[in-house]
Amino acid sequence: MAFKSFKIGKYTIDKPIIQGGMGVGISWDQLAGNVSLEGGLGVISTVGTGIYEDRKFSEKTVGKGNRPLEATNFYSYTALQEIFDRARKICGDKPLAANVLYAQSDYNRVVEDACRAGANMIITGAGLPLTMPEAVKDYPDVALIPIVSTAKALRILCRRWKKTHNKLPDAVIVEGPLSGGHQGFKYDECFMPENQLEAILPPVVEEAKNWGSMPIIAAGGVWDHDDIQKMLDLGADAVQMGTRFIGTIECDTSEVMKQMIIKAEADDIKLFKSPVGYPARGINSQLHADILKGTAPKVACISNCVAPCNRGEEAKIVGYCIADRLSDAYDGIAESGLFFTGTNGYKLKEIITVKELMNKLMNGE
Image (cartoon, rainbow, N blue to C red; front, side, top):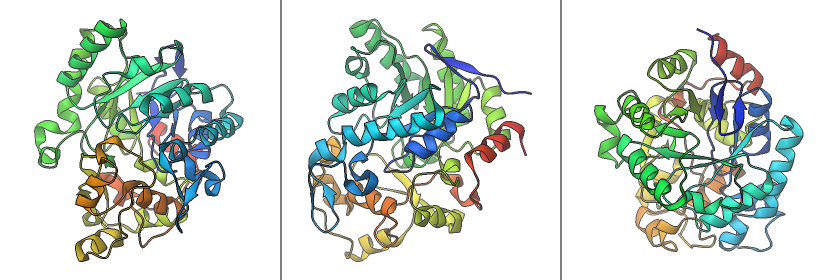
């Protein structure tokens, strides 16, 4: 069966493939621009833009790690604008989205920054984004795509948006617990059969029908053409894929991170505690061994990256600063980097172009 185009708000996506918004520095201009060029939806992560191009867009950095000082620098508008401008040079006027975590410090400001920079859509997870419409009230053409993990969450969100802003999602992403990075379930819940993507997707599809028509996008563990077809058969209009796109030449992250995932075995990919308050999935690396030994880099909240961390208090409990350790991964520092990947990351065995990957996903090669 041939995969079809679909619409999100006023924008048409030629191929039903959305690239996951991966930070820090995994999905910026090169990856997102090329995915949109090839007919998918490229997604630019707004997380950690202050470290883009060796921190030259940050007004102030501190310490030997050259860490952006405070959220205003960690979430740099000038860097985000540069990232969007460069992506636009690749994909022209094709749709581009921005991923903004609900847990981010300065959430509303960063959403507005993304709209000013040229985002056609905003995708938000890491919490149920009940106030998301408020952040885009001055940008009526920008489509809103919340991420949910249950039909109940979608129902609560639609009720709130309808009541406060007479607004409904332009699309919704349903994310199961096999994805990389932060999950929408507690640790034990991630392993329950009733919470797997195949189980949670159909109820969300049914709930969405109660609110009119909105595209449903399945995410979390989607790996190949057959997986895409399976999700479409379950009622999804499209899929979102993150980890698979790390294995592309255009992916913006370091070669160190790409090789870490390529060399990983299935048993190397674990769920870890995170300062964000949700479990996060990544590679069991040197960082985690050092946390257990008590020799991991000391936590010093410099960037104030996520509100739930409470200025480093949660980071001290779990043993690492997520902003610093993700930045190290982007910088290619294997010893102290935090390397997020989905459950299927061990299947990644080669680095190919975005064009080649999109062809494989569309045609089942």
